Image (cartoon, rainbow, N blue to C red; front, side):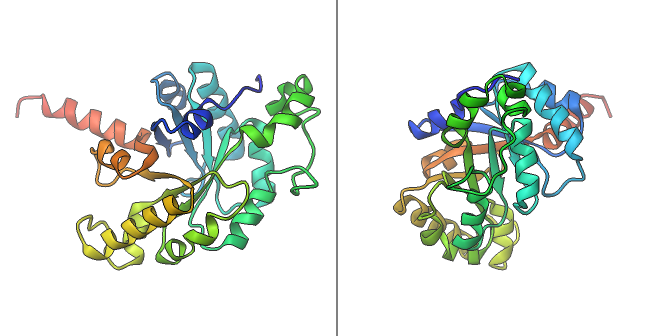
Length: 257
């Protein structure tokens, strides 16, 4: 693998909205198919899945070989050991789920940085992310600059903490998880409920006021333009699972009853 500039991060910093899709299955072929489908980014999920680290590596390889999608990974809880392995295998960005405090996010950011600004162990002399050491110096100098770091807001507590999170040095984006956010205010999946809408509006306004880039998982499905109009620069529009289910349902519906 060759270390490359993070095209997704550069487009986001230029204010260009970007699309993304989740991968929830462990299937390498699905990763390769989506990798060649033109998404700006693909997010490998490790929070809600039983996907092994070895299979995650295979999916990273498949995506990189198939197209230009930037490879992001949602970590389980931001454990430094997990973060180190994901970065050394070539993840180009990480999402921390359910962020609730600046201290938590600072620790997450520190785990992605080499000393003296962080705690990441130096493995770039032989790591896959650094071209198996062939780009060691280039990687050491550019890894921090190119890595996209995202904290997810999925609770009322996290929403309240947005002003503090926006002050964390090294954090690039706050990303709203609408289903969990709605549940945290007693309105699970009720997209028109005033409690959810107030939490969503407050999170968005605080993030933007704090100078943070904003992203979100599309909810309800099907209206990405509405999320972009609210200031979201990175929007996930579906997943391998939802794409497969939708295509299967559509195909089945064509059969005469």
